[in-house]
Length: 306
Image (cartoon, rainbow, N blue to C red; front, top):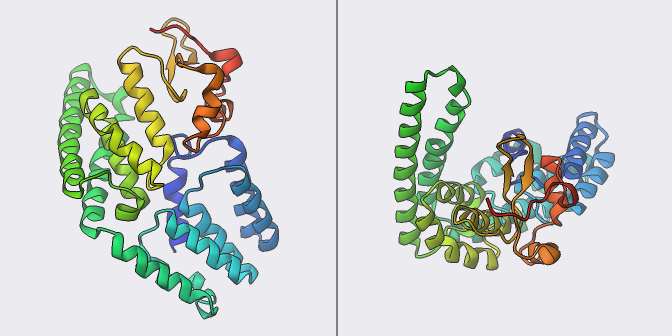
């Protein structure tokens, strides 16, 4: 049950910040297809190939690989992957423990390591924060889903809709700030799990620039503690710099030429060293990141500040 749900969650973000590069996702698709065909060992090899192509793996992919390895009788490797999934931000331990596809795995002598890890993680998680952030995530994303239908709105309706989204965003930001203050720091994986951590970043991304600048240091500290995504930090810092009319650091921001309609990479401070700067917080080379846009530094970079 959880494996299917986790797949849905992760592939919702395929075009966003969570997946970098077409190779990884194509490997995952191949692995899934092989597993569905009952070729579990071949699927395991393909999952390994996918994981070797990325430095940061979302927990759901490890979970699905573990399910495949249970079917292959590779129990020890499956246990290791469940552990990676938990360390990566999985917090729905009830579903994990009740997952019928893991029944054979629970008979393995090393399953007790998973039970111990769950106990350790449960001691650091704040279930109240997790619940609040789950609700805030829905409030943040639901208007944006509706927004995809804006072409059907009248001009007046579009203006009203923008005002409503702005009001919702403002309330969400205040709620997240209260949670950060209550926690006395950024809400990392160890406190709210992956989805909660993502939600905090998404909502701060929609805040005023002054608020974004205020919370960059806390996010940076969380990244250094390996409790938040380096890509989240990069995108927030670059967005703030772009909004202030300055060059970005990591090259995460893409703009569109108003005249031609073509996308291009917004100006970067230290272009010659950008890959080393990206690597320092766990990001892949910039051209690998730009694959999703079908862009490259060589052909689509503009050093001018708009």
